[in-house]
Amino acid sequence: MVDLLLRGGSVYDGLGSAAVTADVAVEGGRVVAVGRDLGAARRVLDVTGLAVAPGFVDPHAHSDLVPLMPRAQPFKLLQGVTTEINGNCGFSYAPDASRLEELTGDGVPDWTFAGYLAAVADAGPTNHVATLVGHSTLRGAVAGFEPELRPGDLERMCELAAEAFEAGACGLSSGLIYPPGSYGDTDELVALARVAHRYGVPYTTHLRDEGSALGQALDEAVEIARRARVRLQVSHCKVAGRANHGGAGMLLGKLREARLAGVDVRGDQYPYTAGSTVLAALLPPAALAGGGVRDTLASPGERARLRARAEAGGSGSGLWRDAVPEGVLITSHAEPGYAGRTLADVAASGDAWETLCDLVSADPAAEMVVEMMAEADVTEIMADPLIGIGSDNGAPAGLEHPRTWGCFPRFLGVYVRERGVVGWAEAVRKMTSANAAQFGLRGRGCLVPGAYADVCVFDPESVGHAGTYAEPSARPTGIVHVLLEGRVAVESGVFTGGRHGRLLRP
Image (cartoon, rainbow, N blue to C red; front, top):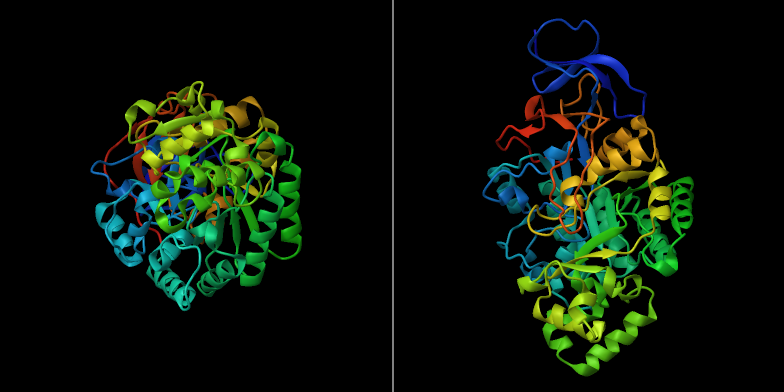
């Protein structure tokens, strides 16, 4: 007699195969059989008419501090996500993230990477988590916000990276529009990625540019992966800025060319035309050089110099040219009255650039949702088999981007059921095995005998998310049951309570 039987659902294996009507037997936290007439079970869940899939794997999360929140946080389980990869975009919270506090807005202990992982494990995550070590964090720990490394600094960064991989980091991440990571050159990143190669883990990157210099940024990422001989994950694939719309084919072409040349590259994407990041990302990264953004922006001459750089465009210019003030929604600020207003609204009849500088000077960690992408590019990128789904979520509080609460249900409801961009079997693969494989998560992302019983049961007819940029935290619909290693964590759409996730190491 097995522990649990999911009876009569349309079972997707996560590998791209068509669904089969079958039962799924679970015993000891693992899937032990998929088929019919599997015998008796201590508990049976009738899932007739529902889709049964592997638990979704989010390859691009920013839930690094969520496990340390005082209450369990089921916002990912309620989307069907059983595993998250944190530490993306070059920002992990160890080793020693204290130097980055002005930009992140988060004060944390001076953790080693092993100490951070121990804190997460002790707190008990609500879903499974694995964590990358960030290039910006490594650079900040050694050199702060100084653009130039001193002799021996890179060697020390490589030592810290090796310590992180020994502790259980599942890869190396970079965020090359954000200082201090933006100050690193290609050779610096190759040196760190070669350490990742020794441990068999991937390199993930928020490219140095996602707009007018997207092609060059992709070339750099591929060069780093080729020289270091690592798997490459291109984060939140997009074509940003109205002047660059229509470039999805170029992006996908470069990924395919790289694979033909022997680089194991894939990407992830969120199903929205707006992104979300710190408001300071609109400025050239040079604004934060030395870690004194307030001092820099206090100078009218420096503001004018930065504006000229921002308006010139290209790598190192920030996102200013890729956005318009009407499309910049402030989502958090030290002055609460700014949240929920656009940059254009705050500027009123004044100069939007000067208003931006004032806002960032007052709170360098302020955040925004910013309209940048064209729907045609989003769907073209989404349809490609090299692209998985990743949320790029923030913490589940405040006026965060709706992807935090609804990325995966939105993808299934809008882009699969309503628009048919991909079929159901391919959609499931994009959320499961396609992501798990990149990060060495063996036994996850597939629904076959021997796999961990991380399972999402959803209703194809009702799955979706009604969250908006103004009201993002709506509850997803159509996610019926979620299992974490055989334990029912969501039943009939309701979180059952507890922190039953695990800290995963590759």
